Image 1 (cartoon, rainbow, N blue to C red):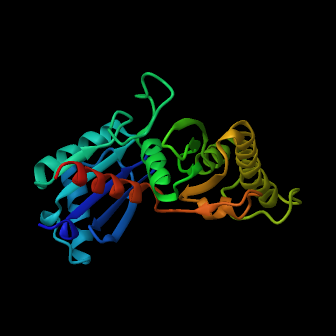
Image 2: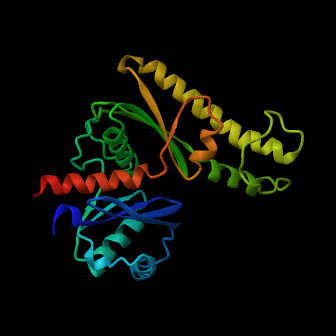
Image 3: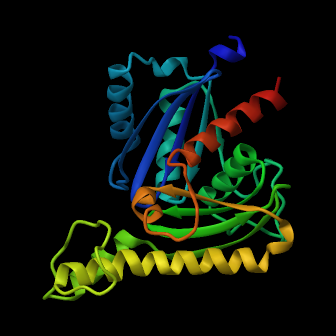
Length: 266
């Protein structure tokens, strides 16, 4: 099969959601997103995946390479079993030890999550400059990757959704609200006060981190800010910093890793 006709299955497994994408040598075909569930078996996940693929007239048997990035060990094992049981394609499981060309400042980068590794690689290859990458998932991560592929470090903070959910559970007088842009910095009712604290508070934190990182690493030169993750659009609208919204950064990064793997194994 020619490189243009290769078919890639990429899977980003997070604590809250799983995103699965199909690519060919020509690029993006389709993707799906559903809740992470450690109680499901590989058979159940494959049944879901097969149904979704059939709706797009995709035969999973034609997949030539699978690339997995997971921050949930139990789900990593489930998907590894799925690949082994149902697919004949080679599988790549991304870790900080994967040979991607990234440079790490510590001797053992093993503690760095697969999501951070893939996002760093994706931004490095896609934007070709220094990038601050803010990923808004279960956790909010803010990392810096240099134009030379140097992983400078990261910040890990509680995510907006999990923080607000915990607040609603612990405070009996507060009811769950739809997350959206607050109208004012000071709320005059419970809903607006919560929105300001949850959304504006998170944005103030992110803006401050971005400003401090840019100041400390000014010697690197221009630094772009990339936002990704489920609520990237909402947060982006409320930041002072100029940003690029790239919701497909992670699965695009997994696709780029597939292409790199094929190039080095021809």
